[in-house]
Image (cartoon, rainbow, N blue to C red; front, side, top):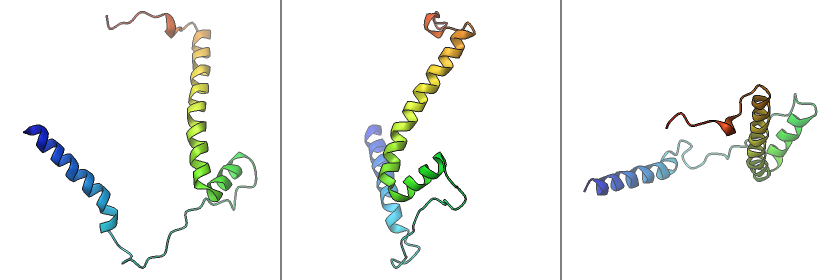
Length: 100
């Protein structure tokens, strides 16, 4: 019975979370759409300007590039940290588990 109540409460919370944006009509249904853009007035050139322009031109391309770049940079930073730790004598691959 508790599993059924927990499932019902979860379903109720999910439905409220999904319906809340449609219930909160602050503009009364006649509001203008909001344009979300990056401010590139003070960015002259370089990587930041390219990144902001890509955000302004295509949110899909921006999202895909973000999903590709973040894991790649995480792996690169992990390998660099592992390299420097091995240089200092810390080798995490050859340690014994302390939890035994």
